[in-house]
Amino acid sequence: MRQMPIGPYFADFACRSEKLVVELDGSQHADSSYDRRRDEFMRSEGFSVMRFWNLDVLKSRTNVCETILAALEGRLAEDVIASDLRFVFTPKRVGGGAL
Image (cartoon, rainbow, N blue to C red; front, side):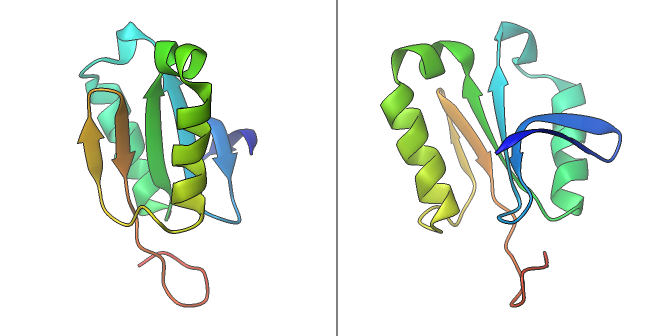
């Protein structure tokens, strides 16, 4: 995973083969309408979007990595909204494309 353009946006980290975007957010992203539009665009392109707070990455790196791995392995298959994580799941079609 690495930073990459997706349409008019840049993802902090993305894995094209697994259609997963991981964003690391500071407080300026709290309740951001821009981020919601951006996430909607990425979902329309078939990507699931996972957002973590910067502080959680610094203090709980193992938990963050395990959560990303769970998404990559398909163990997260629904939207999750929590104080330390926002995961917007996009189901994939058989053959790798998005629904």
